[in-house]
Length: 335
Image (cartoon, rainbow, N blue to C red; front, side):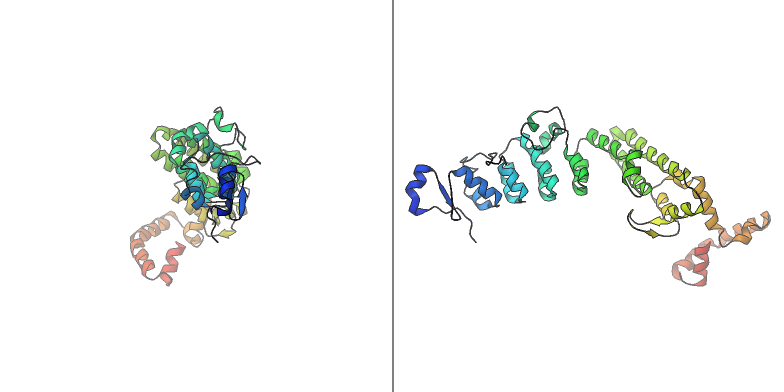
């Protein structure tokens, strides 16, 4: 159905005298009401092509009787093209509220466009400062709410990553300091060790990029490594250690594989975890699980066995590569 602006020829006189407008069989008192209706219903043709904004017939930041601005109406109804037009016509103080609303509603494409808009990228530092008054005069969000806080609160993970990647280095560092809190990780994540591994790996990657804050990121990563070893210190019994080291998959998945967590620690270069006494004890048990005779043998026999093993290892690996399900392949898996 065609929703374009249609002049009502029968009321041409009343249009010029009372400034009324007819749109989609609706009569509006003035151009402002017509503009707000078009924004709420996503009529890009009317907003842009009819040049209501371009010819300055109406202000872009007008509000309806309920106090909602044209931009808020467009964002709430997820009218992306209308939002793009309005953003080019509003002052930068309005961008913070627009971004927060898009984050709150989960409209990722709109939030991403706002964050990449030249106006936002130029003035985004001011939006993160709680003492900056202009951005909060008519805001529906309190002054202590930042885009990053709101995105994290509502689990908008894609937006969180974008904000961290686009934000100021100091802001990003402050965010990671909060995310690296031992108490926060322990109380928030069902698998704190997995979260600590992944976050520590991310911090060490950032340390290579953010040279100015390299020491800070490395310090946070080391703190997480120490945190994980302290968790290992509190392991009670063989069964708990078995579950912890064999856990694999995401935190909400009950999947277990032989020493999967140990392999992940090696992948993430968590030396403190790998060298921990509990891990080494379990590793020795696995190593000698099918070689108990060698473990209890005389020192000379053990040395001869290890020497023969080193000599034969290249050939065993080749055999395993070509025939993984053969008897030799099974032997390689055991040792």
